[in-house]
Every structure is written in structure tokens, then in C-alpha cells.
Image (tube, rainbow, N blue to C red; front, side, top):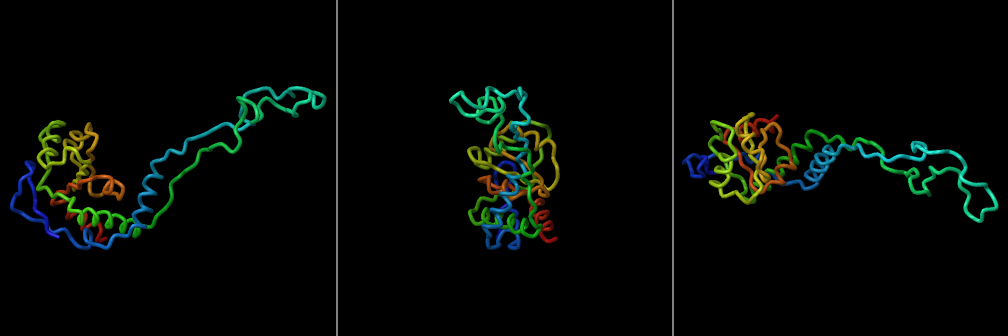
Length: 209
């Protein structure tokens, strides 16, 4: 698949980039995508939720009233789950939600996500993205020039660029990552995928390993 290369003004440079079929033209595997996104979201969970059981509640262990003769139920402690302020039965406990996926499956998922974006013509290739200073206005101008102001965008750079990253950080619908950190969730969560000519090469080399 051949794509025209655009400059920072959104105009065609005359150059073209070939999106490799091995990365952007595979038959999408929806189940692999599901597993990879599920793992990504699970890894974001802190798992620090915690409620106290009756043995952790601060309170007296004195028997509330005598066993028989009150006409009410038997009660042994104010910390019983039956009372307000008592312990919770089978409440949430700290846990790790992360799980393992094979490297090959994750590659299939990422290729599938990129192929979906290519099929939908939602990939734009830029010549080079670089700003002289950290200015949100510069990134806004870039998004406006590409007619993506009202859409979620994911810009994939071949290497870290502090000026570009910090210029985009205050914008809600934009995200900037490097090619080595590309993940299925971010690709699918964005409406438009913005690549540079160099990041296309980086992705092709990474998936070839």
C-alpha cells in the first residue's frame, strides 16, 4: 500500500512511502486483538482495593447480650458483618491483575490493528515532525493542518523527541509515543494514526524480528 508523504503544513511533498504488506496488510485476527487489549487494560489496574474483614475491625469483642432470653438473634461481637460498621464478608483484597501473553500473539494483534487502520484509510505519513521549542500552539497547528482537530490522533515517532511530546501533552485527544512502545490499544483508540517515514521503517524492522 502506497501513501503520499505530507509535510507539517499538511501538503504533499511529492514523495511516497510503501506501507509493507507484512505489517499493514495482514488478515486481522480479532481474538488476538481482544486478548492484547485485555492484557493492556488489566496491566493498568493498581489492584490496591481492600476492605476489612471482621478480624481487622477495631472494636470490642465483648458479647453484646446474653445468649438466651432476649427474644432476638444470638450476637457474639459488634464486629459481626451483620452490624453497621462490622467487617465485610468476602470483600475485595489486593491482587495483581496482569497476565502473560506470548510475544508472537502480541505481534499478530498489533499487525491486525495496523491493518485495520490501513483498510480504513486512517493512516497519514509525515515527512518529519520536529519543533524548535516546546509550544502547544505548534502541535495544534499541525493537527489543524492535517484536518484532525476534532479526532483522536496517535503520533508514532521513530525515537524520543522531547519538544514534540511536551507540546502535545496538554491536548486531550492527542498522544505521542515512539515506535518501540506501539501497542494495540493505542492504535485502536485513535481515529487517525500519524506516522513518520522513519517510524514506518522502524516498525517494519521491529516486526521482522
